[in-house]
Amino acid sequence: DVKVTQSSRYLVKRTGEKVFLECVQDMDHENMFWYRQDPGLGLRLIYFSYDVKMKEKGDIPEGYSVSREKKERFSLILESASTNQTSMYLCASSRGTSSIDEQFFGPGTRLTVL
Amino acid sequence: TQLLEQSPQFLSIQEGENLTVYCNSSSVFSSLQWYRQEPGEGPVLLVTVVTGGEVKKLKRLTFQFGDARKDSSLHITAAQPGDTGLYLCAGGEGTYKYIFGTGTRLKVLA
Image (cartoon, rainbow over all chains, first blue to last red; front, side, top):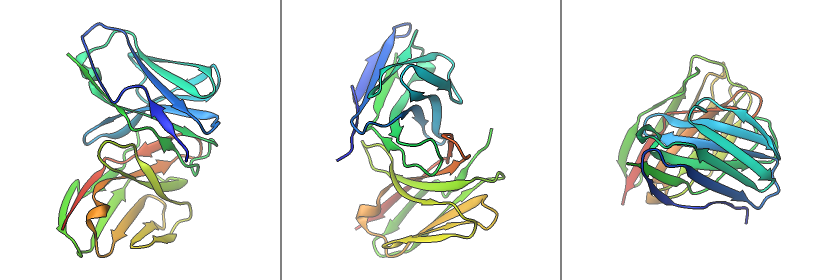
């Protein structure tokens, strides 16, 4: 059974803190994604990685950075958390880079920044 | 920025009823995917359509891609409580980029 896991289901942080969200996939997928999900806005792509140490900015990268040191692990970093980064964060992976490829999602991390 | 508008935003129906969810854009997509997300879980892929006018069926769910590849619909026949969830459409731009719709939250009452 394919799996994408995220390190925390719920996280509460204070404004200005550095936050790490970890994602691990066991499918040997090349591609990994970080999205944020907000009501009425769907999923918005923050960053995409197509290989180890390779990354591309998505639609809303401001305030975020990422790290991919190993193929199976993709981390999202909030350098200095702000209240407008309170959201649900979803990690996903896919085998190919075509838009017909299936993305496999983790269960999400609900982050609250106070 | 491309947008995919879904309608309705919320839908609450009785078990056994039929329903249709719409996904509309002014832009053309190379493919269209539908996902279902249950509470506490990530989205799970239901179907991918790639040809204008294409119709795919998955048990009681029927998916259609518009002829001009700008819109799609999802029809559920005889809805069941297990169909409850957030339905998301996602338009593909040919590469890894997807534009996700605004979502339709469906609740089917027993």
